Amino acid sequence: MQQFLQKLKTQPVMSGTSTGQAFWHATAADETDSLLDSYSPVDGQLMARVHPTVREDYDKVVETARAAFLKWRAVPAPRRGEIVRQMGEQFRQYKKELGTLVSYEMGKSLQEGMGEVQEMIDICDFAVGQSRQLYGFTMHSERPDHRMYEQWHPLGVVGIITAFNFPVAVWSWNAMLAWVCGNVCIWKPSEKTPLTALACQQIIKEVLEQNDVPEGVSCLITGGREAGTWLAEDPRIALVSATGSTRMGKAVAQTVSARLGRYLLELGGNNAIIVTPHADLNIAVPAIVFGAVGTAGQRCTSTRRLIIQESIYEDVKNRLVKAYGQLRIGNPLDEKNHVGPLIDQAAVAAYQTALFHVKEQGGRLLLDGEVLEGPGFESGCYVRPAIAEMPAQSAIVQHETFAPILYLLKYRTLEEAIELQNGVPQGLSSAIFTLNLREAEQFLSTGGSDCGIANVNIGTSGAEIGGAFGGEKETGGGRESGSDAWKAYMRRQTNTINYGTSLPLAQGIKFEL
Ligand code: UN1
Image (cartoon, rainbow, N blue to C red; front, side):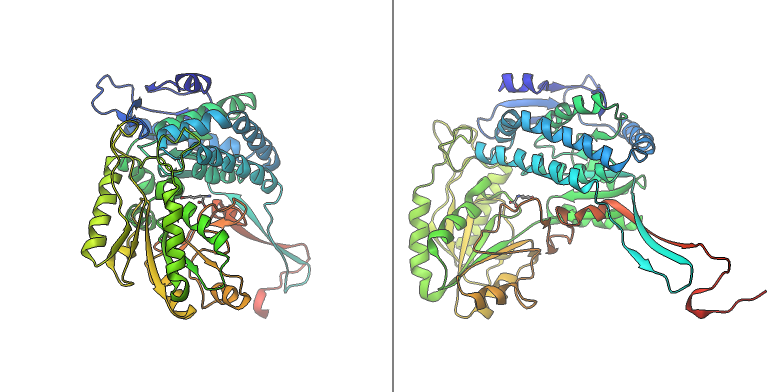
């Protein structure tokens, strides 16, 4: 790991500095008691001690970013795209190192760590193309010798608050698009994964320097909730894009709304898969297992609920129990293992509390969860994935627990299944497994899934970057990454131009002097 850190030019102990054009500011305080300690959930080792940004330094960061915006917005968008293309090349070069660091700091499997870096590379490629496609409509004016069109301008400083579970990819979805659109970014990563964020800044630093990008285009602040609040309250931050819990998102939305700022939220999910009697169980079962235990159940898109038609219920249940029996839990850097640790002890406690509620609320555990102990599990963060049969209306099923717990629910008609699927406060991802066209189309119709993502014969997690990513209800309504998500990072301006010799007014109004 030291070797990787060295290659990433990232020091495990960070003090206040500015790393060339990739600007980050932390306190150069002597006291070490306020340091953010990043412990690896893999083996419990202290990976880094990072100085949290203090308010005074935050203000310097924002001012540096604002000054950089004035220069960056004048750079032609395709040229900005070219710089993002070079960043993509850097991420290709460092895929193994960064993927390994993600796996070690966050605990997801090495495969998924590498997959996360691949998402970064993909969004860089996407953003390069987007840099030449910031299209506005043209309209035909109702007045003679007039022309109408709309154009898109950058917003200014974009604040990006990210969660521990995708410590690098979600930043890149936001930053790459925000940059090609002409914005500058201030990133506040999760206090649980500061080292991967610092590594990203190091990786892109060379590109920023070589292209004479002004300091402040890519900024990083470190800290906990307080630093997020600074961004939310600050009228100098044009857009706050926040990924995390619904509780955090509501606080950000309220604070940003109070100043009529813009926000983009990607919050909790409580994603379900419906399995109908027409499902191909050979593809459904692995999709369910990956959805439920991938990233140890800590994706926003993780599968938490399985809604199974009663005639195949026993069959699906037995296949799942068998498949779970083959899962290997352990060090995520060992590619033989499927499931790594939860992020920290607090996550383990939340997992245990949820299992307690399962029993208390009349659920039946088909596979008991447990916290694993012994050699290899010293960090205390490894848990066994659990499956519970639940009464449909149980309160715990309405709740998103970031852990590998899968709730099984039974249905009779597809209408009933869709109602169950929609009957939670969250609305991120959903899926149906069926080879029946009518069932699939009913699930996708207006009266079908109410989620931002609705898949057929694909699990709830693992979305490609090309689609708009996000969801409804308590998921927050925002859309990030592909499709036309770029519009969230720009302001629209409608322009009407009169090239004639008279001044006709719209709506036929006469005003003669
Ligand atoms: C998240 O969990 O916040 O669709 C993002 C997926 C990944 C992204 C998840 N591409 O599972």
